[in-house]
Image 1 (cartoon, rainbow, N blue to C red):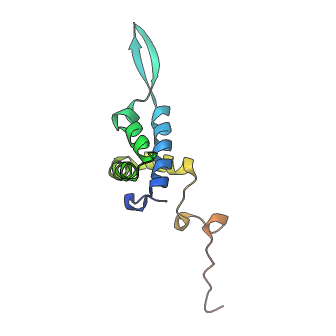
Image 2: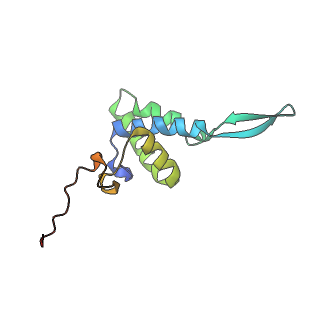
Image 3: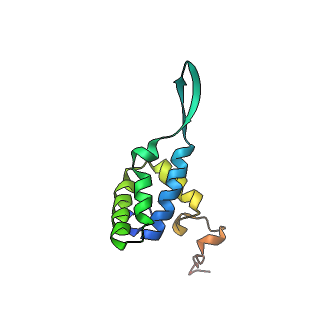
Amino acid sequence: MLLDPDSFTIETALEAATELQKVLAARTHRRKVMGQEVLVPGQLGEALHLPRTISRLASKQLRQRERGLEDFQELWPTLSEFTRRKVTDRLGWYDPKDLDWDDKRSNRRPVVDPDA
């Protein structure tokens, strides 16, 4: 759900940006520190200026929130499909059209066969 960047609101962008920061921080990589190999948390969130974007989205000033929304709308399409799906899955967002008939969230009526 909400894969189109223009469909984000300030509130949904804030939710997604916060979750994206967690997803990116959960990625680790190995680095040698003083001759020892250690696991280091991902730094991609900082490189993408997520803390600044989140701060803007959470600002009390409407102009700052709108700037944060614009920043996030520009960032979202640049993320990989895997990363976007991981964020939306963790938020519980879904597209009802992609669900199976048996899934209660699909909320679709069965197709009626006119010959029956």
